[in-house]
Length: 82
Image (cartoon, rainbow, N blue to C red):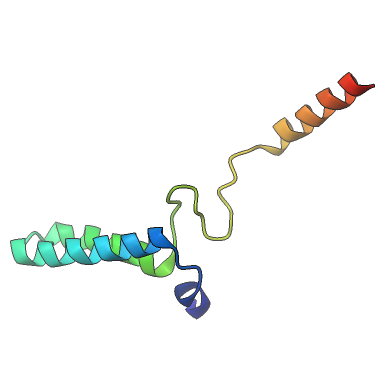
């Protein structure tokens, strides 16, 4: 957990962190308590690097290409070459 918090920082994580803090502060000032939950969610996304934001997934588990389509493409090119 400590490694996940301290490493892998990019501009999206910093943006989530700053946005979350701003939302929390504004929600406290406006006394909109539901907004605090949204701010906490955004802040935790920045701190703990979870969620898929612009394809930047922690651990690379958001691969959208299927293995079947890759194998099918290889078969077609192999047949065409022979």
